[in-house]
Amino acid sequence: MPSKLNMTNTMTIIKPTISIEYCPKCGWMLRAAYMGQELLSTFTDEIHGVLLQPSETGGAYIIRIDGNIVFDRKEKGRFPEIKELKQLVRDVVSPEKSLGHSEKKD
Image (cartoon, rainbow, N blue to C red; front, side):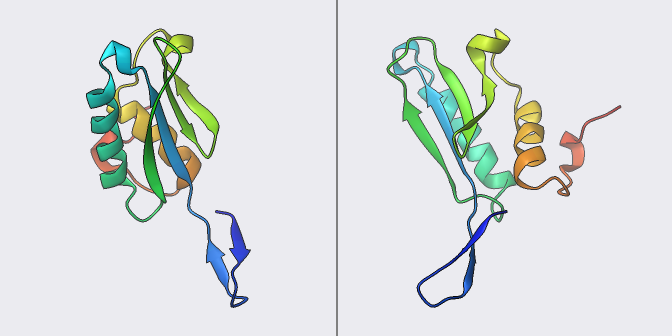
C-alpha cells in the first residue's frame, strides 16, 4: 500500500477507496449498497471505505479501486458475483489475505 508523510513527519498508510458507480434509474442502488456492505465487512482493515456513486450514464455499474476499473457491467455483460468481486478486490488491496470459502478453486 502507498504511504506518505503527514504533518508530524510520521509515515501514514494510505488505504484504497472502492467506488461503486451505479445507474439510479435502473434501480441498482440496493445492489450497490449490498456489495459495498460485503466489501466493508470483508476488508475492514484493508480499505479506507466504499463510495456509492450515482451515475449519469444509463446502465452503468462500474467498480473501481482508487479510480482503476476492476469490474464494468457493460464490458462483461453481467453483474459480478459477490465471491468474484471479493477476489478481484483482494487481489488488489491485500493479495496475501485468505477469503476462506470464497477462495478461488483451481
